[in-house]
Image (cartoon, rainbow, N blue to C red; front, side, top):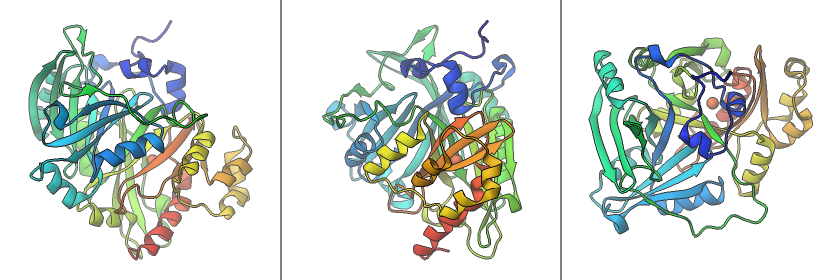
Length: 406
Ligand SMILES: [Fe+2]
């Protein structure tokens, strides 16, 4: 008997993902949504503001293998900005760039640079969520409202989270009728003039695993409480102090997740150490709290990393000593490929009581040392690579030092 709480979302069915695969890919778990005061189905779109959305849309297609599915811009009545909706598996990114010189996106971009403005969440009942958000004292940025077009109607609302980041809540099914358009009303279906290279895989990642938020010193617990109280998220894992301190910089991190674990938010704050934390560098250059990295889930990290490198994506380096460390070798045991294959690609590996994971981190995606991506392949582990934090942070510090920010 299939568990009734374990149903696939529309976007997952669209992407031909199966339940078993999702348990492995993103650590999906069973839970009872009927007692949840703020039920969250999963991710909706992740919205980026960028300096040049036209060019960024090309980059995400040509390098990250995403597919252009929808567009909004001056040609269909949106005179403020261009917005490109890109899809990979079950996840959508929206890239927005100002057209009108007076667009509010310009001030946002001038302050923060390229970054994530909106971590959209699909919910079955927007009004229930907003009522709960108000009871719990959250800042409601947009009361529930509906928009419609020829594809149907969606119901939306928005609440504030850290910095100038928001969660738009998207209800795609109203009275049993699901919105049939490619994104939300105002967006038109759009195919691309970009043609994938011959032999390129169908996609390089299938789902979004987690989005990490960087917040100010002393604020991490406030935001953990926010997600606990407002959204009913549960605490997953906790990394404090020595776990993630190198000789120079340090940070504290806690992780919250929604009931089914589709949505996972690690939250970081800087910790006091000998030199400036990588989180301080982020906070300086993003001009405040914001989304630090997005973890993209793949079932073949070797292929994904090979394809990305072929397109010039730069990853953080891992010294050979990491792979030659007998303690690490003993701890990770047997993984699906020889360690030499991981070493060749600088892929990190971590194991906990539930299984293991393979992961690698890109250098910052834009000009500022702020947002970056992680590529992750899970095999049972529901962790975040705690065992790699030291190696990872030393690698980040080497980059931070090159930038003169350590
Ligand atoms: Fe991560």
